[in-house]
Structures are given as C-alpha cells and as structure tokens.
Length: 97
Image (cartoon, rainbow, N blue to C red; front, side, top):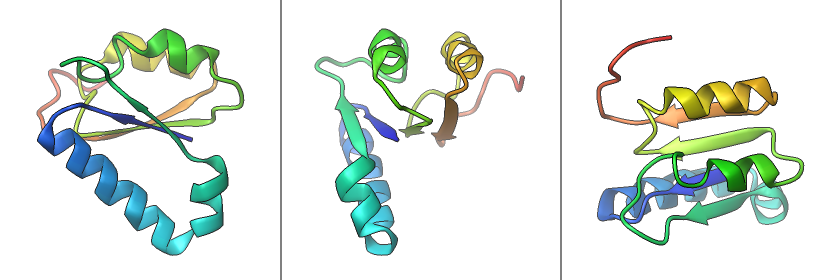
C-alpha cells in the first residue's frame, strides 16, 4: 500500500490521520508494508507520480487522502494494472465513472 501525500497543510494532516489510524489497528502491517510518497512541489494527486506508482513493485492499493477525485486517467491506468485506488477527498468530482 502507498499513501500519496499532498504537500500542503490539509494533505499532510489527512495523510497523518489516516496512517496513524491504521497504525492503531494494524501496527505491524503499517510498519512493514505501508509506504508513502510526498510530492516535492505544489503538485496534487496522482498526475506527477503515476510513473513512480506504476513502477513500484508489489503495490495493490494506492490511497489518496485529500486529493485525486478528478484524476480519471490515472485511475484508469492503475485499474488496468490491477492496482486499486482509494480516494478520500472532500472536493467534488467532475463526473462519476
């Protein structure tokens, strides 16, 4: 599992809350299997890190707290590679597909 962390206050906060919540219930899993990707600029979502995600071995789930509700192309790319995506976002999606 990878958590995509947007580099703004709500992105850091959402990711930290999610990771800490999981750690409360599944500490060994989080400590041994969870990785995270922190954007190095003001990017949001999956668009700038999709290649990294696709090329990371043994990923079965990508979690996007506070982002990615409109990253339809990236969702499709991941689905085609049998990688699940969980979007936890408060922004409205332009469409539902």
